[in-house]
Each structure stands twice: as structure tokens, then as C-alpha cells.
Image (cartoon, rainbow, N blue to C red; front, side):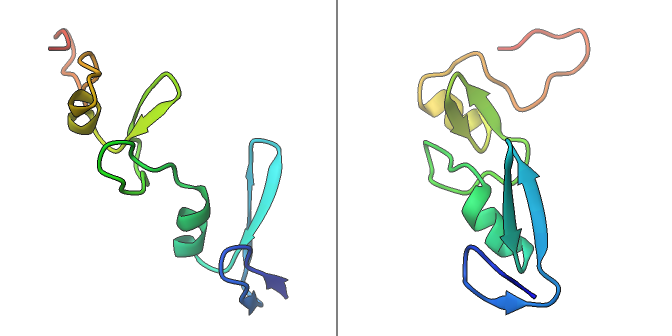
Length: 84
């Protein structure tokens, strides 16, 4: 069995996540998200989807990035169109 690094549960179906040269052990996706997901710098939510990044700053969506002054970020762009 393996011990979850987030909650400490000793679980026979724990899994490993290999990321950026480190190995992490969790008993569920919730614990993995809690430990590894970046936090939106505007609204504070965990970024569990693609999110957007500006330099070293992470946001859950382009709206939050724009609220923080990052005008060039968009959630998605149709082919052949420019960002607002």
C-alpha cells in the first residue's frame, strides 16, 4: 500500500504522478488536484483545465487574466481571427 501525500490515507489503489522530475503519490484525483493544481491569481480557484498563463502568472480563464491587466489573453480564438 502507499500513503497519499495530501491526506495521509494508506490506500491499496494509490497512484503516482510523475511531474517536473518529481514523483507524487495520491489516493484520489481530488488530493492530486489539491496538491498540484495552480491557483488562479484573480479569483483563487484551482486551475484544473488548461487555464491561461502570462509569464509566471496563472489564471483559470482569460476573463480573470484581463481583470488583472493582461489584455492580450483569450480563452479561444477562431481560426483567422485576431485576439481582442
